Length: 393
Image (cartoon, rainbow, N blue to C red; front, side, top):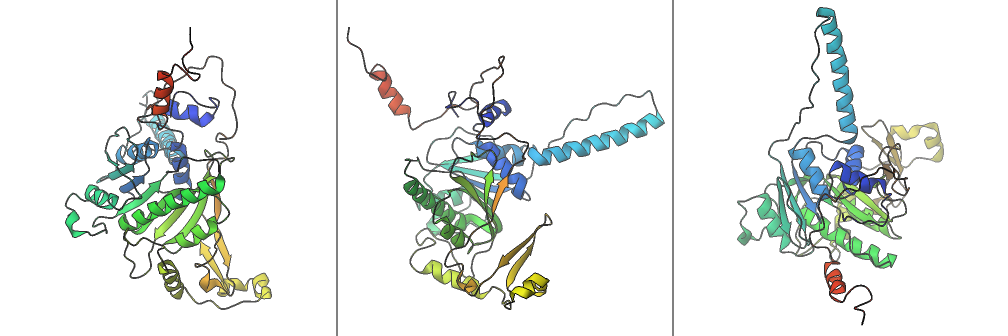
């Protein structure tokens, strides 16, 4: 996040510098965590396309330092206020003249935390984060990652399965957009497939995978392919992500690969007819459900096992999915993932411009760009004497 911005009235841009984040994208991960509780029971994480490190910074402050943000911090604060009021009431009854010392919030860092951040661009170090400068699309990155996760890993074995798998893999990577939306969406999908192929090598069963996507015309095919490996696939749009942007985040929960599947970048997912065979194998293990009539559905007979899938979520919401005659081949074709908007409605709107106070103080960036792609262009322009070249006298 540089010092200059196209719109300094962007609330999240200013808020990131005020709260000490390297980039405004940190709020996207925090809002995703509020909705899906991504950090629950998580101690081993891989951050792909990590530079400039805002998502790694969130992981460091939440997992290593034990800080709380968003809804979790609010609930913790309300509980402390309730306990303090009860304690104050008891002490006023016992000794009315005694003063109560304010309670200091205690940090609860997690044990045995390991976080590995990978990016092709250099990234400034973070406390407790293992940083690798590598290309996630290249097969040589897998041995480097496995060695970082397990120091006893022997690359000569050529094994591409992690002996100590991770709980969560996140990716906020995106290509340099060209403005040609179809091309940008295609390149982004290939980057996501590269992240997924690497994820299949290191993620434990039941793990989670979060990655940025560009919503396009045929993105439902991508959802259907992800559904082969994960029990639940959801498209999420954080409030800190601009509504005018085509970006969204695919949240994949409960990693459950097909039986007999072995991850390898030498033969990645989707090569030849491998994906189609995995989809059919996955469909064979699906439960067989009787076909109901429309009257059965209207009368409530679906609860007795009709031709639909009913999922009772932890937040007391029931998801009902109608199944047609081609349900057994649905994972081969198109499948529409649920779409969820994340973030508190009282939070700032990423597309809105807020008036700046007159006494505002312009803050410097938390972490200046280490090696921006435009650095060479700026140096060339400076050597030429500016945007219009050197003037003759």
